[in-house]
Image 1 (cartoon, helix red, strand yellow):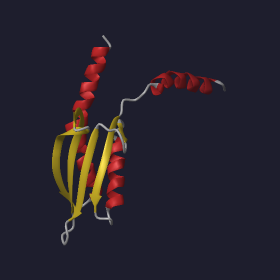
Image 2 (cartoon, helix red, strand yellow):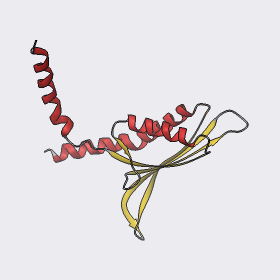
Image 3 (tube, one colour):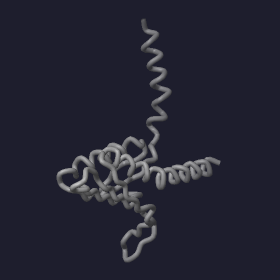
Image 4 (cartoon, one colour):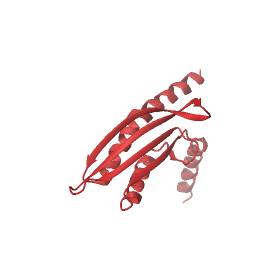
Length: 145
């Protein structure tokens, strides 16, 4: 009768130290431009897909990356164009303004907004976040010596 709760408690105690450690997150600021009819929908899809990556936090202030996204409707044809400019914040400052190094600029065309947003997030993940994760792991290994 008491066996299940004790096993659950032991498992919980084993997991707690790992979950109490601070998670390394990448702070991302989004700037969206879209037709008012689809703006909220696009923001929702992008936020959802970014947060699914697990190590991304969407912020309005200090950030690692700035994503400038423009979505336009292909009228009269059915579909949308999404333009994404990925800017990485650097430590270089010019005239007291943080400088940005463009990681990528890409345009995607699709008839489905969720697919379009997922493609943009995947491009950001592969061109910017994957190398940043590798660099963090290398630094952690080096610091752990």
